Length: 416
Image 1 (tube, helix red, strand yellow):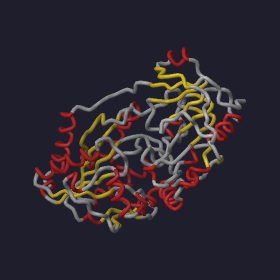
Image 2 (cartoon, rainbow, N blue to C red):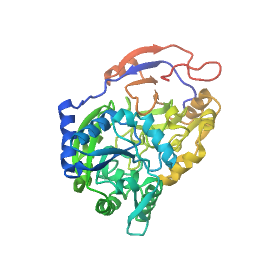
Image 3 (cartoon, one colour):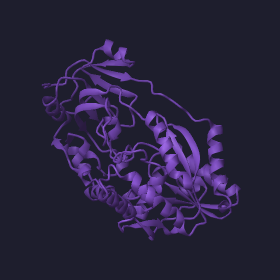
Image 4 (cartoon, rainbow, N blue to C red):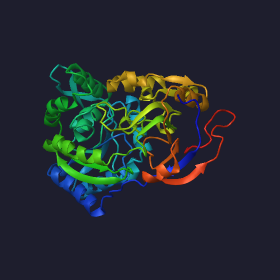
């Protein structure tokens, strides 16, 4: 068993794979989106915007609003974020502002969805909901990133169709959809059958709908954009998920004793720390990341007390527990259908005590420290020789001096 953080520790860098989108391709995707909406693009059009920190999101929303204005439409923004933002209209508008989506900046007003209207039902009875401003519009544009989901597995995960059902459904609609998925065989496996039934029913009730599907590369930079007609939402999500998986971020090493994550939060991942990055996702892939123990040190500022996903870690700190907004975290758990992901793991007074306790139960192996599961190009690695690090393509920035903890038991070398 390991019982201490052994030298040497190296600060390393791995050059991520980049696939930047061309400005011509981006303009063409926006133009195609507006063209697909015609003739509804001559009237009031709702632009549904998610809660995630998508690359260049304010710029994309502004460009789309401008293109709609040019086509003769009157666009407005509506939040499409399920239970995020505390599940409340004011909180969702605040979340948009934190993402840089404000009326003056994007050139379109923001209409708060004060109420959700029942427009249809799932097979087992739960309602399908859409916000009143969307139903009162003459057109709807969905903007969302296609990516691996933190809870669901299968050929369709996060994307346009899920945004239509969960995002625009608000907290009640998202909770009903999760409950329905669980009732037909487990929410982690049953997203696609739910979407296949629900999406056509929602499209029948909604105004003419199109989507702008986005994919990011490993650096979280916009990599691909394309327009999708409403009837093609599921097919677009299915096809682009393959590309998104190929370009998903990855750790610099895939095996180790302990993974130290300095911060977790909702703006980083829907579960605070991306389960696909840390190797604790549903349907774990053969050959994927595997660490004996994971330590989560703090909540990010942007998560505003939401600790959903903390249960994916094995160890945490008393200081992190003190940051938790339990009401917001519980709401996220209920809405997602995974309340167990808010369960607090073994808690320690200091980072030093947490590291030593974790290593005491680990097999010998490397220790990897990252800032969060979005920032993966730079890391701290211990228990691996310089020659091995070089052989796997990692650049050594510096060898870190001892000690590794200060007198208060906090990590000295970090990325925050």
